[in-house]
Image (cartoon, rainbow, N blue to C red; front, side, top):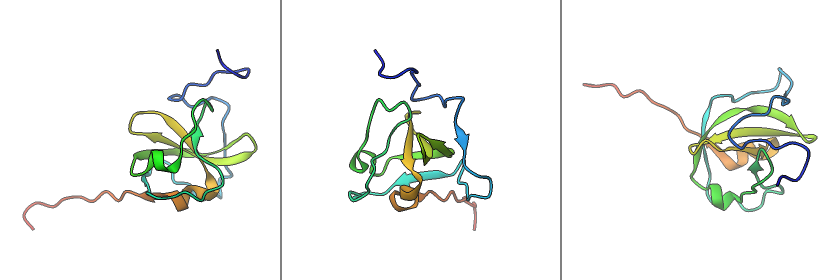
Length: 111
């Protein structure tokens, strides 16, 4: 049984998301890793359905890909697809504090 009018899958983005303003810096499709030992953020990340809440210790060193930054429930959130396909929302003001970008480098053979 779901609390609320709509049940949202934690692996499928809802159709009614509002993208943040286009002049905002976007990190769509960037790969990120959660930093360890982040305990002082005021709002914890949660699943996009709101059915599961995480601590930053739960997410420490987990990786994912940024799906986008959206307006949800009156606030701006980055939505990250974890390696297990679950979608979580992280408050935009916390995003650069609790994550780091994974820089993909090309390996060059023979030199």
